[in-house]
Length: 114
Length: 118
Image (cartoon, rainbow over all chains, first blue to last red; front, side):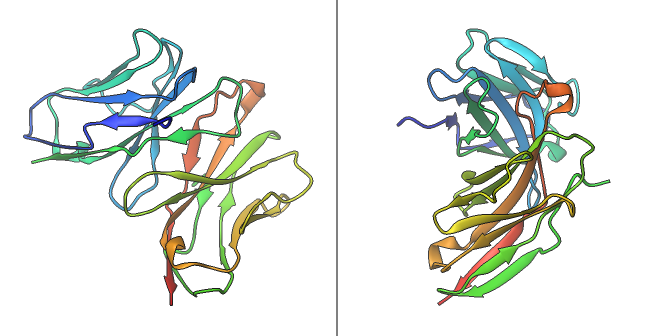
C-alpha cells in the first residue's frame, strides 16, 4: 500500500518494560510527526522530523520517550520503563515538505501498559 | 486556554440529513490552517477538508464543507446528506504559522462523536 504504516498495531507491555514503535511514512515524505492520543481525547503532538533531523521534540512528555529517524525514512518511537500513563494510541503522520495543507496519518499503535 | 474547542461531545443525525459540527479556535497568528479529520472505530485519522486563513472562499470537498468565519474564529464542518458510514469521531485541528516558519505541527480539539441513525 502507499499509505503510512505502523507496527505493531497493538502492544501490551508490563510496567517497566521498554517498547519500540515503528512508523513507515509514505515514500518521499520529508516531514514525519508523532502524536499521542489518550482514550477519548484528541491527538497531542510529540515530535517532528525533517528527513533525519529531529527539529522539534517539545511534546515528548519525559526523558523516557525517545524518537529517531536515522536514514530519513522509517522512524522509531521508543519508550523506556513504561508507566500506566503511557497507555495510549501513538499516531505517526507524514507529509511532503512545504505541503502544509495535508498530513497523512497511519493507523496507529495502541499501547496498553499493565 | 484551549487552542481548539469542540463543544459538542456527541451529535446525532438522521440519515440523509445535514449536520454541523462546531469548532472554534484561538490564535494570534495571521497565517494558519484549519483541518477536519474523521476517525472511525478502526483508529485511522482520515483527512476531510482544509481551510487556509487567507482563503476567501469556504472550502468544499464533496459532501463536506467548512463554514469559515474568521472574525468569530470558527471553522464549523457541515456534512450534507449524512450516510451511515459517517458515524465516527470528528476532530478539528489547527496549524499555526508563527513567523512563517511552520512545518505543519497540528493542535487538535477534543473531538465530536457523530452517530447517524437510519
